[in-house]
Length: 64
Image (cartoon, rainbow, N blue to C red; front, side, top):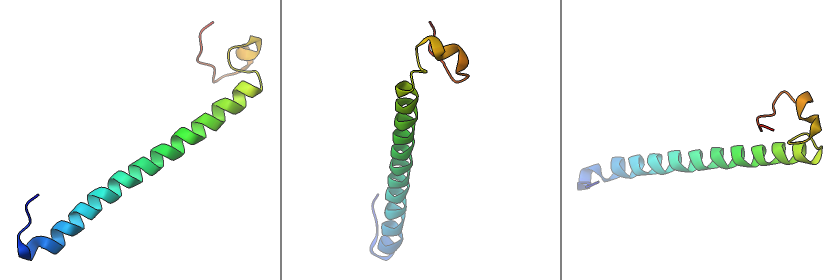
């Protein structure tokens, strides 16, 4: 993005806004990945995923 001298401040603001959106998306994605990791790790430790208890689990998506 080519900025003229009198547009420098607004161009800087727009680029910072774009970087902020990218950082926000990365942060939210990281939180979702970590929460899904802990959710499935907890269910796996309880022996629900992929075992005979799978019929009792309404969230089971793994076919037998």
